[in-house]
Image (cartoon, rainbow, N blue to C red; front, side):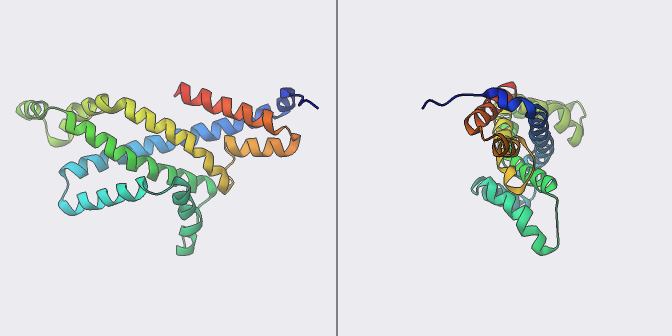
Length: 205
């Protein structure tokens, strides 16, 4: 008996799919923006901060980069409540994703900052730029230009890794796929479409 494909079984769930896409993109966008802000600050401090600050940032980066994201998310969602900090599933997912993005962004942006020629900084100081404007207007744009492909790649990876937030009942695209296939019993068609959507989102990013 041959399997009869029926993609029309997904049509009634079009609105649910759109909701899942929105949640996935929203989490990826918010965590990326927050993570890049934290990553920029962390990269600057890792280069110009005090020794103790640099060591703390290095330890944070190593901890996050060498542990699975799903474990980090479980720690935030299940571990923090034992210390009295209860978070909703969406907030926990956003916090875990932001922490994860920031750790990778610190190393990427730090490499970009180191790639900016020292002459650029010296010239800006000669023109009277103060430290903060110098960093924001002269150094940082050049640093981001050097590492932009790596940052975009990390953002894409973060969006794809966000699929695991379904494990704490965040109704993202993967969670929606689970819901749909549990209702229409069309597992192949459902996850095939979910896969194509993730592919389209990643290529778009």
